[in-house]
Length: 254
Image 1 (cartoon, rainbow, N blue to C red):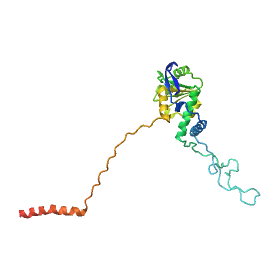
Image 2: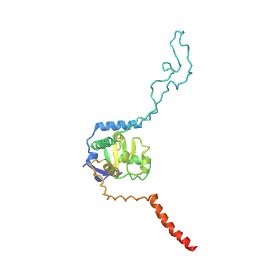
Image 3: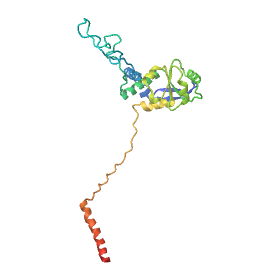
Image 4: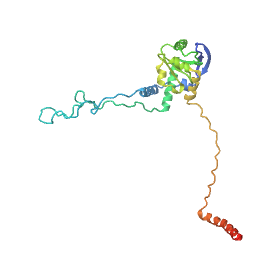
């Protein structure tokens, strides 16, 4: 297992942590990284492109001149695609470029991206993101102590309002949660800064060799016997027996 130093926000070493080989030392699959990047970028496209067709451009619908006898080419509308200011044929329409990607491929690409960052020595484990202020300058000074140069991807587990406010105005800095981490974002940024809790969360989520949780055995309960419904014929004799004593009492009083 790779052993990585854990540093505080001052850049000083405060401990070490062991990372899973299956997550941070996996074989780097270039094909998976390419497919995951294409899938992520396709989902970001707005798809709002639009051109006007023949029925949408301005212009009357009348026939410009008669069909025969003028010596000119026949024409039926001023909005024809052959004419200037006419409609566009087979132009782009609003659509969604997103498509489904198998979850196993996405998780494999994320393992490759994390392993590539660790192999390039551009991964840093931070003890925690306990910021005293939400000011951007304070975070910028902290990132300078953590070898921040061009860009950085901050990964924090749990809600951290100060970190969210301080990082949103920094160019080249992005904050992400472990469950929303994308391989493209990991490769795009120069450095990857993980909190200790976020690293443990990623190991728990991405490790394919983890043992499944054993479900306790539940004893089966025998089904109850079906209740027999009394028929109308069986109810009639019982009703007659209940009526006879009442009749005797009535006669005895008279």
